[in-house]
Image (cartoon, rainbow, N blue to C red; front, top):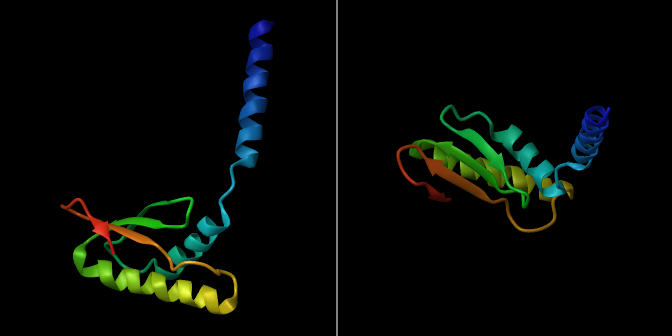
Length: 102
């Protein structure tokens, strides 16, 4: 009987935790920028940080064009009035290297 109650308690706590785990506004805007620029064959999304920074892995020849695309998408968001604030952050980790900020 005790294990059933414990199991139910764990399920309830997990459900509440998942319901409160939502993206920040910065992450939602970064996700929109990612979708707008997800056309580079060697660029793969690793994660979107809480502050909206896109962390990707890719080859050097597409790092600069991808970063430019993300900045253009951020400028478009700013013009639409949905993204006031600092420019979009992008970290491109290069295959075969430690990577670095672009």
